[in-house]
Image 1: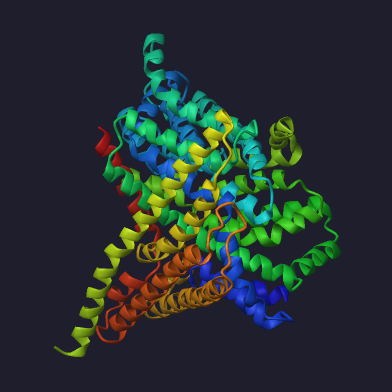
Image 2: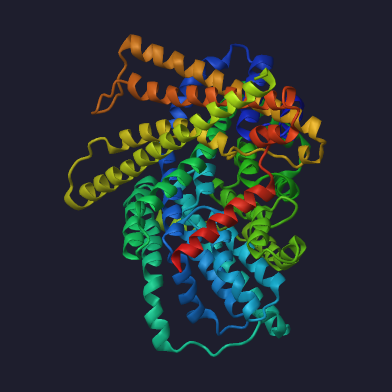
Length: 428
Length: 207
């Protein structure tokens, strides 16, 4: 039964059948083959229940916040301000790349959009100031991945929904690893540019304090939005969906204040939001139905028994799983990889006694790594697309130091789970 | 005009009519979500600051989620936003790749039709029993469920149209290119180009 399912799933995906349809066809076939009573009878209810989950309302709303901010022209101003604050460090503008990506990740959930936005602003500067273009491009691709780890994150909402883990706790758990990873990125840039100053481009005079303070005004709105979303969830003042709703209103107000709000912009933002939402929701609908079928026909239990029999122990299983994600991450689109594996992997990890909030964060870091490893690392392609000269290989090479940083974060999370868990525990 | 020309042309006209409709319902659904955001925000602020009790903004917002999602399915399909993993099929020749595209459309169509049938069953039961939500709003469930069903029906129709267009391209026009245009998987290049163009357009607009 287990083998049939896995072979069938791989076959469906390999034929390039849309992921949502693959999951549904798999669920339908397993139901036909193994269920005692036809479970398809529950399909209508399943569709309706999943589609009308209040927590999932947070997905379009957070996508919308990101779309509005991305279209409001705030990114350019944030980059400019961070340039004034951070470019005195060895590595110069690359810190502004990471910083802008971090701030934008904090308010939107999309890695690709973040990489494209920061890339468009930053890449022309790389040529102007003589940076090592490979390393510079790598920093943008890597910075873009922070979007799915630093809350609010669409990926964390999806993980929480499918694995029935508290989404507020996941959000809180993502803060320290997310900011920590951004910090490790910056340390790596400083260290490498210390030894190889030619990678860091022309050193420019540091901006004066007066200029910095003047530009701070561009950072404040985004910081307030981030602080509000996280603060209200931390204090238990609002659910993620409610925080997203207030965030949407705040983002509209900011776009208006920055002069970027128009009917056309709003229409484009709504269109982009629903395009993404429909894609995610259709996969979620199929995945949640598959989840139900897998549990009903006893396949989840069969997998658990199999792993228990193998006597790998919790740590052995975990390491095997990490290896599995690293390998699959090379080939499978990241969102699909996450959604497809959660129904099988999370019951297993729970059985082995791992904390589900912690595992969610670990999983996201592994997924981030997949975003900047070839041949399917989408962020690499986006940065190369914006760069429009040289080869994709340059970006791949430039991203290597950051892949190492992510691997380091994976090790740290396994050795010290508290990195992820102390903030949620603090909040109670 | 011969069938080999008139049928593809008719299908193209049909698709040209469907596209703006799909776009309009997507923006309509998006507006519903925006309205939901405003209602939830007002709700949460009133509740927290003034202690006014809630009145069902959450319920309306999750109906809006279901409806706007189902309405956006067709647009996402026409826009090739539904994820396909084409690492392996990208290496095939045009003939086999076209076969995979047809299988992909059929699988998506099967999913859509099964969903239509299942939701119709749900709607029928709600209608016959006069089922309402167990909340203060007591929404008659056939209303949101009916709108939810409409989106899936539209999705299924668009899938049928795309399938016919791909078949017409292959059998009548003998053009793999046209077939690929309508039914092919988005390539990494095309996806990247879209993201880059969008970011560049935004960059120009702000400077």
